[in-house]
Length: 332
Image 1: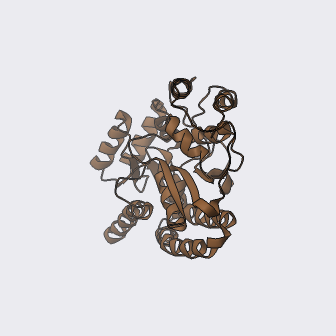
Image 2: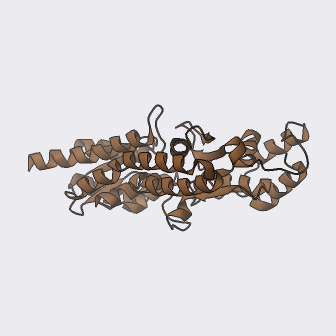
Image 3: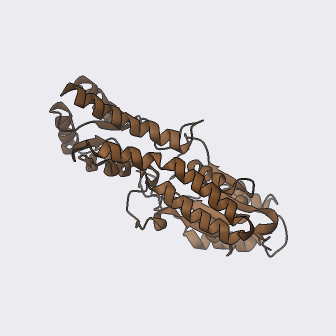
């Protein structure tokens, strides 16, 4: 299927051995050879991609549309639109896997090589996906980069999925792409896309409801994983430096710690948002301080929990904020 030497050559030359991780975690902004070495060994041992020296693309109308998504909630949306007119493979399904430091294997490379459409978050969050697309030389792969779709540049917050409008925009784009690839089933794609959009409307509606009582208040966060939702809700994040340090696995400055502690003690923030997947000592200290001074804590996760849909996951997090507002109004 794929020319093995060509694949290897493009993989090496295309990424210059660097894994550009936006969060620039301490010790991770380094040369990464692990997954690349694994690919080399498998290819040399004959476990690589099989087939002829050139790749022939099977028309989507004969075999269905094959989609590979970097993250499970993006794959979930694609499957809702495709129905039984294609297949969706999600690379990262476990909430315990960090997409930014993920190292793809030969099986992942094979799946990407066979895809008609690849969905990636972009903004450096899953840059390994773009390298796999570039490396296999299959020019017919259509890449949906969500960072590009919403007009964001490298360096912007990559946690796009907390934005209540993102999945609707993604759904509309996928309907267009799938319809071009398989015109025979375009009507079905449009019908399923519209049905999914109807479900997704609950999120922006909930964000608007929350915004009516946000009053442009300040909130603090342990990491910027929920910031786009907070912005849509009408809140301002007060501890950007602290949150960025935690995201990069480094220690916040003493000034950042002192400032955030004072905001909590003096109730200068409406609530504190904790990413429960980070057990940093500094975060634990701030959560305990919030509990001590009766500052509400909103618990969120960066990755989707097992056995939850995207909509139930996001809705449960949004509703925590709504409950905090309702309790505050009842006490005033």
